[in-house]
Figure (tube, one colour):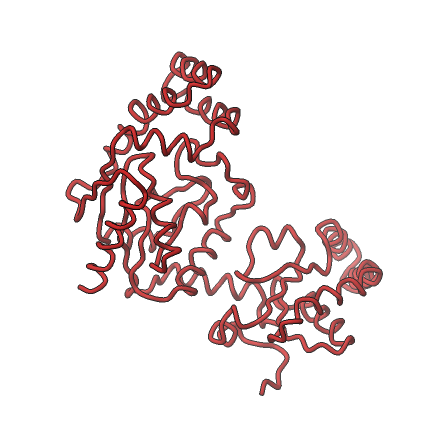
Length: 349
C-alpha cells in the first residue's frame, strides 16, 4: 500500500509505464517538446495562459500569479476533471506530473481528488525523467549491442526493419523517432517532423530499450545526424562497434521502391523544395534538369539519376570496407528473411 501521494520515478518505471495512467498537465507546447512516453496531455493551463501566469509572476510576484491561475482554471474545472475520469476508467493507478513536480501537478491532483479520484504525482516531474534519460544516454548499458543494416538509398532498409519489428525482433527505429527518412528528401511525407526535438528523440530511443528489453538490436546504419537531431554519442559509438550487414540489390528494385516510398505524385513540390536545397552540391544546371523531370512526371528517370549521380557516391564513402555480412535480395520479403537469419545467428553466438 502506498501512503505517500508523491511517487519516485524509479517506482513507476519498475511498475511499468503500461501499467499506469500517466497524465502530463503541462501546456501543449511543453508536452510536444518532450514528455514521458505513454503520457496523455491534459493541460492545467494552455500555452497562452501559461505565458500570462509567467508574466504575472515576474511583474507582480507569486501570490498574484497563483490568483490569476485560479481565475483561468476555474471555468475549465468540470471539463478538466471529466478528462481525468475518462482516463481512469481502466482502473489503473493514475499519476500526474508537471515540469518539476511542483504547483501544477499537485494542484491538478488536489482538484481531481475533490471528485473522489485518487491521483498521485511524480516527485521531480518531467525534469526527473529528463535526468534519467540523459544518464541512460551518457552511461549507455554495456550489455546492449547492435546489428547495423547498411545499404544504398532505395534498398528498403527501413521497411525491412519495420517488418522484422512487427514480427517480434528487437529494432531501434531511428528514422521513426526522428520523423525523417535520413536523406536530403527525408522530411517528405513526415508530418511529425515539425514536432521533433533532440529531447523527445532521445526519449523515444530510451523507450525502445525500456519497452523491448533484450540485448541485441537491429538498427539502420545511419550517419550521426538524422534530419534535425543527432544520435547520442554513446549510442552512436556502440553502433560503430556492432555487427555490419550490407544490402546488395539491383538498381531497378531501388528505383521502383524509392518512387513508391516518396510518393512524388502527391509530394512533388516538397520534393522540388528539397532538390533546390541541393543546388550548392549539384549545381544550378542539374537542379533545373531534374526539376524538368518532375514537371514531366518522369519520376523514374528523376529517381534513377538521383541514385546514380548523387546518393550512390555518398553511400560508397560511408559503407563499411569489410562488412560482416552481405545479403542480396530483390524483394522486401527476401531481405527480411535473410536479415532475420543473421539476427538469430548473432543472438545465439
